[in-house]
Picture 1 (cartoon, rainbow, N blue to C red):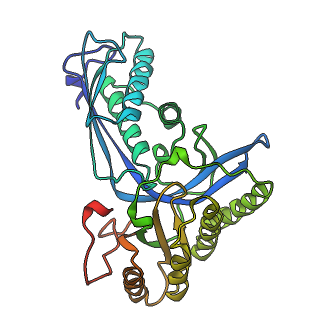
Picture 2 (spheres, rainbow, N blue to C red):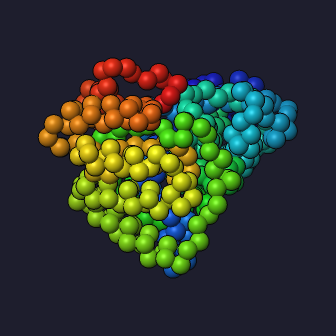
Picture 3 (tube, rainbow, N blue to C red):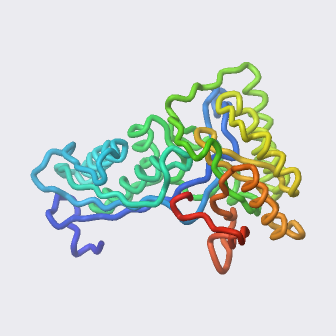
Amino acid sequence: MTAATRRPGACARDAEGTGRAACHHGEILQGVFLDQRRRPVHALVTLPMRGPGSAARFAHRPGSLPDEVTVTPAGRTKARVAAVLAVRECAARRAAEPCGGELTLTGDLPVGLGMGSSTSDVIATVRAVADSWGVPLPSETIARIAVRAEGASDPLMHGSRPLLFAQREGRVLEVLGSALPPTVVVGCTLGGGAPVDTLALPALHHDDDLAAYGHLRRMLRRAVTDADTALLGRVSTASARLRQRVLRHREFPTLTGIADSTGAVGVQIAHSGNVAGILYDSRTPGLRHRLRRCTRALDREGITPTRTFTTFASPTSEEFPWTNTSRKPSAART
C-alpha cells in the first residue's frame, strides 16, 4: 500500500491495508508471578516459531457504521471485534469519522493446538486496519486491543524477544533478554492433535504457585542471560510438569522419556493446547543423529512429529532441515 492509494484521516473508498503476524509453539513458562506492585498476575513466556502465521487485508467501506465489518472466512469473531476496535482507535488518532469495511484472513495455522492462531489473526487484523488508515500503532496499543477482543492474548505483537507477558492484561512484566538460548525443537502433537478450548481450562490457584513460579522465573532469567540451553530445558520441563495438573496429557511420561533417552535438555508444551516439543542444545555433538532417534521414537509411540525448528535464525533457512527421512509431515499438520 502506497501513500498515493491511501487517504489519511478519512474513510476512503480506495483505502486498503495489509498486516501479518507470526505464531508460537506453546510456552516455555506459564504460571502466576508477582508484578512490580507485588500483585499476583497470570503470565507466560512463549516459544516463538518462524514460518506459519496469519495474513489480513482490510478494505474501507465508506458510509458504513464502524461496527459494520464483514469477515472472510466467516466465524472469525475475535478478529472481527479487533477490526472494529482498531477502526475506532485509528479514526480517533486521525480525528476522523470511522467506517466499517471488509476483512479477509488467510493463513496456515491450525486452530486450538495452542499456537496462538486467534492472537495471530487478531494482530494481523489490527495491523491491516492501521495500515489502511496510515496510522502506526505501537505494540502496547495492539496488545490492549487484542486483550479486549480475546479476553487473553499471546505477546506476538512484541516480536520474538523472550518476555514475561501478562496475557489477561496485555502488558509486559519483564523483558528477559534479546533472545532465547540456541535451541533446536522437535515439534509434535499430543492428544491426537485434537483442539483444546482454552477458555474452558480451569485456572490454577495454589499457595505454592507463587514461590515455585518465582523460582522458575529467576532460573529462566539466568538461562537467557547466560545463553544456557540446558537451564532453559529444566525451566520448560518443570513448567510443563506443573501444567499437567490441568492438561493431564497421557503421553507426557513418554515425551519426557524420549527426551531423556536421546540427550535432550527438556520438553515444552502448549499450556492451553496439544502442541509440544522436545528441546536440544544446538551445540550438542551428534545432534542430527539425536534428532533422527527422537522422531523415530515419537513415531513408534504414536505421537505425530510435525516440524523441527530453531530459536535462532539460520543463514540458509528459517527451519532446521527435517530429520526423519522415512516421511515428512504435511504442511497441514504444522
